Amino acid sequence: MKGAATATAHANIALIKYWGKADDRLHLPRTSSLSVTLDGLETTTTVVFGGAPQDELVLDGVPRSGEQLRRVSVFLDLIRSRSVESRPARVVSQNRVSTAAGLASSASGFAALAAAGARAAGLDLDDRALSRLARRGSGSASRSVFGGLVVWHAGSDDATSFAEPVPCGTDLSVLVITLSGAPKAISSREAMRRTVRTSPLYEAWATRSTEDLREVSAALERGDLESAGPVIEANALGMHATMLAARPAILYWMPETLGALAAVREARAAGFPAWATIDAGPNVKVVTDAAHSADLLGWMRRRLPEATVTANGMGHGVRVREGAEL
Ligand code: DP6
Image 1 (cartoon, helix red, strand yellow):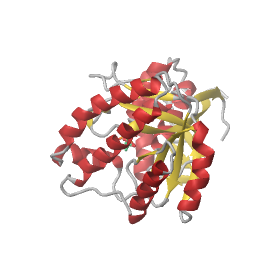
Image 2 (image 1 turned 120 degrees about the horizontal axis):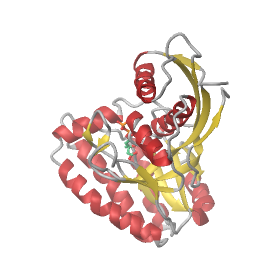
Image 3 (image 1 turned 120 degrees about the vertical axis):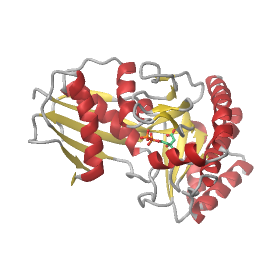
C-alpha cells in the first residue's frame, strides 16, 4: 500500500539520565545521556497516510483523543512539513510495555512512529536524521532508534542533538521490577520542567552528570561493570534528589520502591553485580550482566514476591518495513 509503513522499536533504560531541557520546543536536553536498548519491551506502529479523514490514533486497541492524539498529530505535522505528504494519517500502535509506568513507552513509541511515519511519507532518512526526528516526539526516543549501548549527545541545536551507538565490552542485562502499573501522577515532561525551574539541586546534578557519562561510557567500553555500576546508581538517585528539592516537590517513589532498593543492596552484598536505576515512576530497574541475569532474576523474585520481575537483554534498533501490518 502506498503511503503506509510499519516499524518496531524497543524501549531503552537510561544509565545516565536525561532530565531537563535546554529548549522545550526542539527537545534539546540540558545534558547528554546514555542508555541501553532492551529486547522484549517493544512498540509496533503502522502509519497510513490517507487512511482516515483526520489524524487518528489507536493505541493498544483503544481509539485515543485529547492530549495523546494531539502529540501524535503535531509530530505527523512535522513529517508532513518535510515531505510531499499532506494527507491525514491513521496510526495504529501496539505496546508490549506498560504505558506511563516509567518504562519509557514514549521512547519506543516515538521511535516507531518516526520510522514508520517517515517511511510512509516517502522520506529517506539516515539513522542520525531519524534519531533527530524521533527526538522531536520524545527526547528519549532519539536513543531507541539504535540498539545496544547508546549515547544521546545534548548538542546545541537541532542538527547536533542526536543519538548514536557506542561500544560496550560487556553483555548487559536489566531486570525490571514492576511495583505499580498505575499511570504516573505527573508526566516526566512537566516534572523535568519544574525541576529545572525550581530545584536548587538541579545545576549540581547536571554538572556532575557530564562527568558521570564520561566515567560510565569508558568503564562499559572496557567491560568494567563494577566501576560503572555505582555511578549509574548515583546518577539516578541524584536525579530523584533534584526532584525532591523542586517546589512543589516531585516524589515518584512508593514504599515498595525503597523495599526494592534495599533488595538491590542485599543482592550486591550476596555477591551479585547489581545496581539500581529509577525513571519517572516508582519502579526499579536493576543493571547487571547477562552472565548473572538468570540467577539474579530468581533471587529477586524470591526476595520480592509481590512484584513482577522480568529480565531483559540488549535489544536492537528500530526496524521499518513497507505496508500496513496493524
Ligand atoms: C526519566 O523522553 O519521556 O526516563 O522529552 O519530554 O518526552 P520528553 O521526556 P522523556 O523523558 C525521559 C526521562 C527519563 C530519563 C531518561 O530516559 O533518560
